[in-house]
Amino acid sequence: MGNRLKHSRYITGFDGIRSLAVIGVILYHLMPTQMRGGYLGVAVFFVVSGYLITDLLLQEWNQTGRIDIKQFYYRRMKRLYPALVTMLIGASAYITLFQRNLLNNLRGNVISSLLYVNNWWQINHGMSYFDRFSGESPFTHIWSLAVETQNYLLWPIVFVLLIKLVKNKGKIFLGIVGAALFSAILMAVLYVPGQDPTRVYYGTDTRLFSILLGGALAFIWPSTRLKGQIPLQAKRILNGIGLGALLLLLVSLLFLRNDLSFVYYGGIFLVSLLSVLLVAITAHPGASLNRWLTNPVFDWIGKRSYGIYLYQFPVMIFYEAKINVANHTWLHTMMEIILILFVTELSYRYVERPLRIFDYRKTFATLKTSFWAPIKSRRKIGFIFSSLITLIALIGVIIAPTNKADADQQALQQQIEQNKQAAEKKTTDSQSAETDQSGQTTESSQKPLSIGDKYNLNNREVTKAKKMKVTAFGDSVLLAGSKGLTEIFPKMTVDGEVGRQLSDSPALLQTLKDKDELNETILLSLGTNGPFSQDDFAQIMNVLGSKRQVFVINTHVPTRRWQNDVNANLAAAAKQYKNVHLIDWYDFSNNHIDWFYDDQVHPNDAGSIQYCHLIAKELLKGQ
Image (cartoon, rainbow, N blue to C red; front, side, top):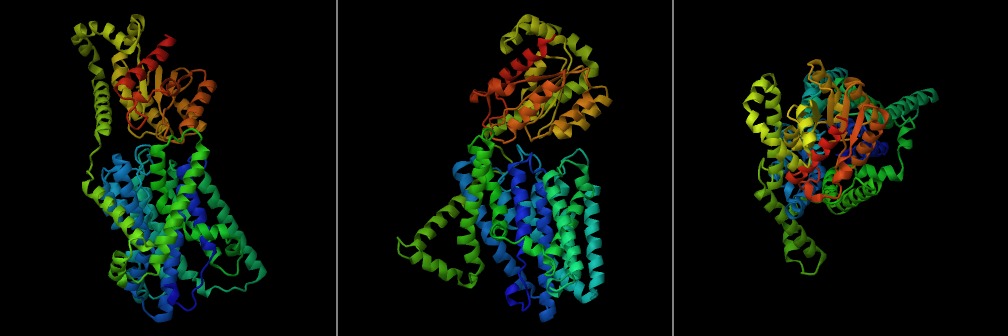
């Protein structure tokens, strides 16, 4: 669009803003304990996108008196589609050849991505952006491209209607701001504290406010109408506002955690407003921010920010599936960043730039030329290679199962589900426990020896375990081993949930405490699904108090970079609190790959016996 507009100016500082946003997003995934608010980079992207698109539409309207909507769509597709299709083909081919456990739902992921409805597809399939262990896929991040492109499809039409029907730009501005407020309020209304916020995080209706605020700015702050020469005092004021917004934005990217209710009760909206201020001051030729945000590094990253964002997840997911990143975290982080930038550069040079200027009316002629080119020519080799990769990707998409796990995943899911149901039934039936025990006297009298043999416990330990009341609280790892634990400790109650985070647990434990369902001995199995801080653990101890004996099981998650941080925090907690005791599952199991399912995290049948043996030994030590 910019090529046809006479007075359009390229604002180099926007590449700087894009760079900060994409760095935030990448580091949020690679260094979650350091870049806690990096996910907010998406809101920054949305604001920049909303402003630029609306500003260009206004320029076209002012210069030509009309909007060529068909050409608008064509240019957007030329800009976005080639890299997206390349990523989808490459990732699908890789999955088909090397990581077939990710074939499940590949077809739905690819089709929804191509149609730009992936955010709603993920919502409908119960996907979670925040389950850092089991929920990640190479296509998780496509949700934001779907939201943005849905806006691209509708906004030119809405823009034309507003210009023709409302006409007054001040009223249009207020109307768009009103719509943005409605979207932000909808996010707050639909958000449920303590539950996974993916619905409000992914929803077009609940995320549109960032794009709308950027669009509203363009009506009162058009880039071509801003004066380069302004009084020195005005320049200082603009620079002060811009620097203040930039500083607050950087603080938000570093510290505003996604599990805070404030984020959904206006936090993302406020970050979007900061982004609006930053965009406004950067766009103003009289301020200095555009110059300050312009440098060769930001120029390089900013121009490739779409590709960097696009390729980040496939690279991270594929790399971390093959390599244990928990040890030497910094080395692997650097390796992943290098790989992301390398793949992005290849895409930028050989896909994005060439296809942005390619005349698609010549597609058939180009394919024909490639087909008949000499066998050793670069064109023919490229044609054969890309055709082969596309064919493999298509085979993967065709054979991909829907909502079906592989044999190993099925066994684990079945084990977890059965154990969870058993734990829930045990809790429900606890009031009639005496009747159950009298009906099982004969059976239980036959159990001690078999339990002792099975879990390598002596008769004294088995007898003590039968009398011991324990509340076990944790995630899917606890659920995987809960059947054995309740065999050893018949009076144990298990409260487990797949994907549970330690940072979400204080409120859940408080509910159990209010119901008087916390025993004097507590077993905590948390940390599989993401990092936490010592402050998070302190909140748990505030609920549990100093009188209960709290046993914490550390984690074996070698494919996740937070493993060592989690284990260090749990070890520190055991030293800090006299009533906290560490169960070192990591050290006990570290050299026993045969104890785990393929994910190297959940204990299989053999591992569960060892898991239960270790926990029982530690729980019974002080008895």
